[in-house]
Image 1: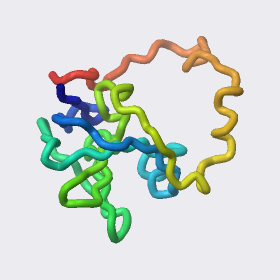
Image 2 (image 1 turned 90 degrees about the vertical axis):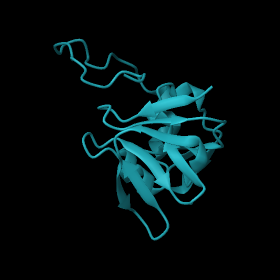
Image 3 (image 1 turned 30 degrees about the horizontal axis):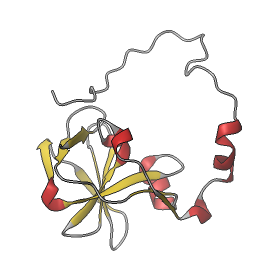
Image 4 (image 1 turned 135 degrees about the horizontal axis):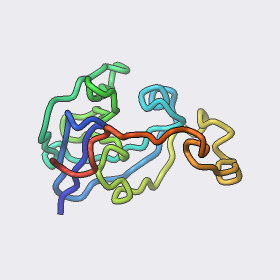
Amino acid sequence: MGLSGGCQCGAVRFRVEGQPGRASICHCRMCQKAFGGPFGALVTVSQADLTWTRGERATFQSSDAIRRGFCAACGAPLTYEWSQEKIDLAVFAFDDPSAVEPVVQLAIDTRPAWMEHLADMPVRSPMGGSASPVVSRQHPDFDT
């Protein structure tokens, strides 16, 4: 059983064979900036188990040890590259992100304090019920 995924626009796609390693949530400032949110959710896989099935990712050397991959067309974050043998993939780039559940949080000293209260915040529809319907141009969550 393999796991597939890709960017938001579908220009870059991948497939992972074998069992992914540990999935984590990282709250460091580099992950917050790269993912545009309060954390980056990543899972480690063997480079040997990873096949890029469509397109090529662009990269940015975010530190002396880390290179980050993303789609040049839509900007979706895809990889955290730190080893010749292993690579971390963005959990929410998978077609079924629930198949890769994070088990640890990292860099919690930079986690926003308001995250502790997410479950207590009011919930409403995404558009507040007053906006016109949104037509998604996102690539579907399967290979095409």
